[in-house]
Length: 246
Ligand SMILES: NC(=O)c1ccc[n+]([C@@H]2O[C@H](COP(=O)([O-])OP(=O)(O)OC[C@H]3O[C@@H](n4cnc5c(N)ncnc54)[C@H](O)[C@@H]3O)[C@@H](O)[C@H]2O)c1
Image (cartoon, rainbow, N blue to C red; front, side, top):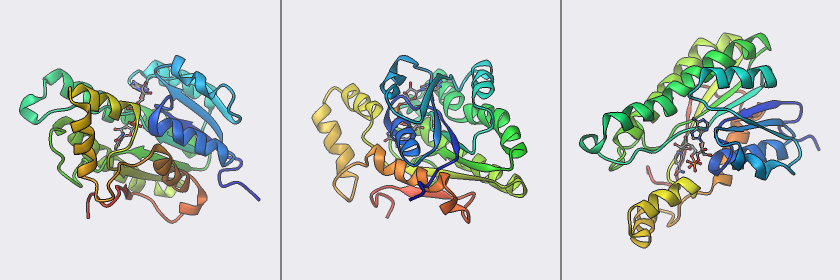
């Protein structure tokens, strides 16, 4: 049986852990040749024995690092922009440094990645771009996530703009908007509260299904959006939230 991404090349950012890692593995399992990238090269070592995956350091806030990656990968068929950072706090609790860093990593990185990868993807006949947004965006106000929510609304806006502008070039761009997902950074946020048990219970209590999502569940959606199965879908926000927004 033909695998769903057979013959395709994929670039994944922030692939060393969490959703990016699960998605790199899922892409490879479906036959893609995957470039798993992260700013943290050491943490990419887990991929060493995984067939179909090549690792490469890439800092999505650094033009030179992105250009260096592009030289290696050439034009991918699939670009999964997964890198992102959760700043915690209301607007009055958010420092200017945290605000600026959030936009640098969550939004300007997309500016940089699209500027680098879109032209070769267009020259190559098109492809699928998947951008990592969040339910915390214009979709839902989430307490103490001011900068984060603003950045993810921007991710969705850019995704729609790219989908519209490059439709004639056979480029599709979609955004994934998850609710809380069990990843290392979630665990860090839980531990940072000082009362991990209460913090975990609070995360779970806002999920109607009584649990948070898994990285693998998000990866399944990313595979669909990366593959030709989703050929009739572009510029959309794909919510995957265990009914949090219902
Ligand atoms: N975990 C959740 O609950 C959740 C929910 C909705 C959306 N998201 C989004 O999903 C994405 C992944 O989150 P996660 O929780 O799976 O992963 P994570 O936060 O646990 O890991 C993030 C990864 O990004 C890498 N990274 C950090 N700075 C980088 C840079 N400059 N260049 C390249 N890589 C860099 C880190 O090394 C790390 O491997 C993020 O955009 C996040 O906002 C996560």
